[in-house]
Image 1 (cartoon, rainbow, N blue to C red):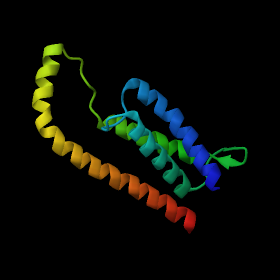
Image 2: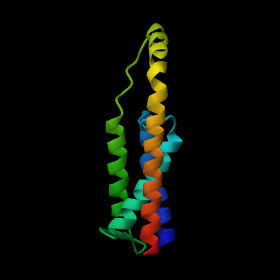
Image 3: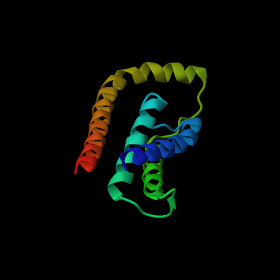
Length: 130
């Protein structure tokens, strides 16, 4: 089950991530790679813990993986406000004022990001070792 769960989560997370990447809604992180990592881990952990449900393909149930992947992707897309278009002058002014509070926000966001990643990995390890 480990390999089947891994491959299912990887395929579903990739298919879910692509539209969000092209729409520019990859969460509060700087880059799509971090969104892809957390989406993959959340899809895998959620699908593995809930267990088989729904239709099967080649004897494997994939609906729980799809549900958790979509749930997390929509949650992250809703949590990040859209970036309004701005002029060049507005961008320069905003960049100057934004730098002051950005350092603390980056540290806090990074801290919670790594707690989330560690928690998802622990959930996967506990599930497969039980």
